[in-house]
Image 1 (cartoon, rainbow, N blue to C red):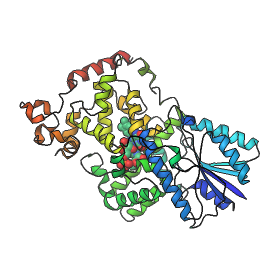
Image 2: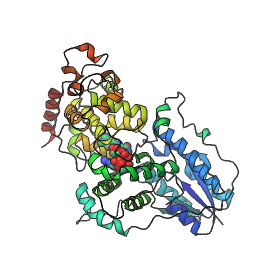
Image 3: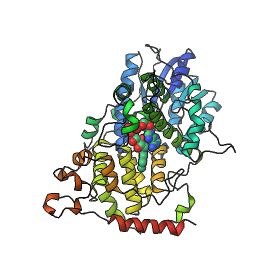
Length: 469
Ligand code: FAD
């Protein structure tokens, strides 16, 4: 007997419930990946994600070969490919782990119906989350819209989760002719801008495991205290690995628990709570599938965003030339490494949506193309939260002051100096607001601020007054 295991964003062998169930059935395994970006429209993977995917698929194929089989890679329509593969391999069952974005959910439901109608067994599993998005419900049966309440519901249930499963050293593989190479998918950029990404990351299951173990051994105990500091390497940087499913959340939770077995530490709680935000993001996207494009708080449909054209302002923000050091440092970190520290993501998003009064969707799109961890659930939550139009949003009138944020979380300027070297010689006292330095030469070619922070803040708040009732 043969079973197809359809890999999607679960690019790992360990703690992979679909693979594990297929192996338990006793069938020979045909591991398959189908590249079908059109089926994810309008949120097909962006450029940085495609770079990651290329390397992650390469790593998965190598891991499968080490266990005696290989990854069959195809492109085009998923349903047609699965049908064809089932026919050629004689497979009678197809296993996969669920995805939760609106486009893939619709597609997967359709595929399940069609394959079942054709007499194939289809089984989907939860490989991406600690809790299914529909498992948590408020007293009245609806979805949660406030994180603290959501997490109060979930946290006590963490101990009841099924254990992470393991995979044997050999996988009995089934062979089918043909298939593409990873290279044939054309995921890498034609103009090679990806050097910074290659220096910063090791995509794949092994890279994920190494990153997790290093973080847990070296940084977990200080995580609660230092996680807001972009000048310190305090966070796990596991977000792209989690997005592509190179490490499962259950395995990560188990490793985290094992890292501090005797003294339950604040670091552990704070870190697991962040995994909770990831769960919450999926909960929201599942229940409010219109939110990648539309504000959850419907009043924001009438917000007086700045009149177009937006191109020039948007470009200065994208390129890290706003004249606000912490914003520019963040945008340049993003461009060079495909990642940005969470605190700085909030600051640059607040600057775009409040000080520049540009629609949050423009920022979300740029992040989508440039982040290696671009994730529809977390990105939508992050942007709507910062813009003030989402669930559990900071009240809209909270506008981040990038100067104060810089002084507080990058007090010695290590972060700003790293990404804005033209400011490196300014003293700490003025680094976060170089426009106050009377000697313009000391600023080199660094631009003057593109907006007045106080004035633009007042305008943003006036816009909120217009819509709030
Ligand atoms: P750690 O601090 O080590 O946290 C561990 C894990 O918890 C992360 O890897 C991530 O999976 C999860 N997590 C942490 N914070 C959040 C959060 N606020 N929301 C959801 N999950 C969280 N995260 C993404 O994974 N993809 C995105 O596209 C994304 N877009 C964002 C956009 C904006 C405007 C903002 C403000 C935040 C966004 N985030 C996104 C959330 C957060 O910034 C990143 O998850 C985090 O910076 C990743 O770094 P880390 O792995 O070192 O995090």
